[in-house]
Structures are given as structure tokens and as C-alpha cells.
Image 1 (tube, rainbow, N blue to C red):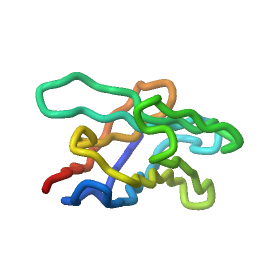
Image 2 (spheres, one colour):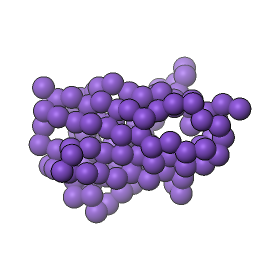
Image 3 (cartoon, rainbow, N blue to C red):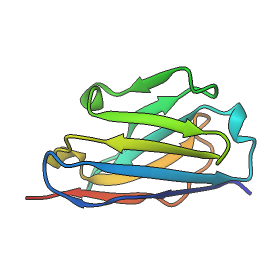
Image 4 (cartoon, rainbow, N blue to C red):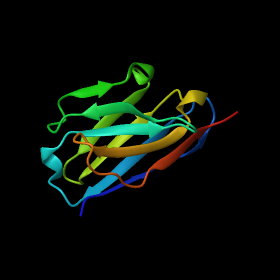
Length: 114
């Protein structure tokens, strides 16, 4: 059974930082690219960032370029997302998933407030 558990969210003021982590199990992690998506209140899912299965290539939505950084640790079957210079509009539940987008797990809430 594929399991994807995101953690590390919280409350932060504008300009602040958080680091999200995603623990995975139940599949061959090293064979998959991974992505982060988010869902803001009252809105649909929005792709945020992705990383290739080798870790050599990373991809970002325009609205997070230069602020967020995705990484992976194949030894731990984990990916991370460093969120810097957070803005109100980054408030959302963040989810990690395989690039095949065929499994979903627990997300983590990020709230940017003043």
C-alpha cells in the first residue's frame, strides 16, 4: 500500500519560512519523480513543484520560483519542500505525491498570517 505523509506545516508570518517533509512507503521511491501540490481554501488543486526520479531536475510553478526549493533523499524515501519568503496566498494544504498522481495521502496545513 502506497503511503504518503506530509508534515512540517504551521503558522507563519509573511516573509517567514517553513520546511515541509514527505515520508513515503509502499513503492519503489527511487523510480518515481515526485511532486508537491497544494489546495487553498475554496480552490482546486494547484501544482507547486516537482523533482525527477534522479533528483537532477527540479521544476517550479512560476508563483514559487526563487522562493521554494524541492529536494529528495532516496536513502530515507523522503522529499522536502523549503518554503521561503512566504506570502498570504501560499496559505493552503500541501500534499506530496508521485508524478503519476495515482496516490494521495495526508497533507499538511500552511497558514500565512499577520
